[in-house]
Image (cartoon, rainbow, N blue to C red):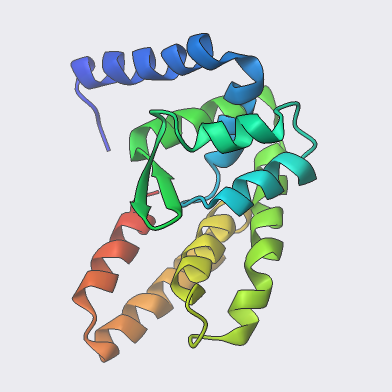
Amino acid sequence: MSLSKFKRIQLEATYQGFADRYGEDMHQLARYCAVPNALTPDLVQTIRVNMRLAASWEDAARYLLTEAVREVDEGIYEMDFNLRQRFVEDFEAKEPGQVRNVARLLLSYYAGILRQGTGHPQYPLARVQQITALAFLDPEAAYEELREEFVRMGEAGAPSERVRMAVLAES
């Protein structure tokens, strides 16, 4: 997705403003939290602890209240698509290889829900997170998973889910 010059300047100002306002510990946390497509308070804490980040547990809780993310459902947050991409780019540049480690953590975090199947209330979120993680680890596998989801949704006649998966495909 190509941004206008104004949008690129605005994005860079937002990105740099976050670093200036919250400091390096929160900025690092935001980079790590840019890997998942969606966040929950527990996932943010899990990333912080398992990746041994300098941010405190208070920082992790406060992060969800910053302008970098917005609540999209009860207890589920997401970062603006372009801002998320900017954080991921910086993450890959500053800490090569760590994006893949966060992606592996994401797969592990949601594995139990995925094993329980479609009856689990968090299954759709877990499935999106699985495909997101695969996009960082094995893009071809992620493509196949997305293709299978589109076929399944077409058979189920779920237009809102197709739109949601199309947005995921962009990331």
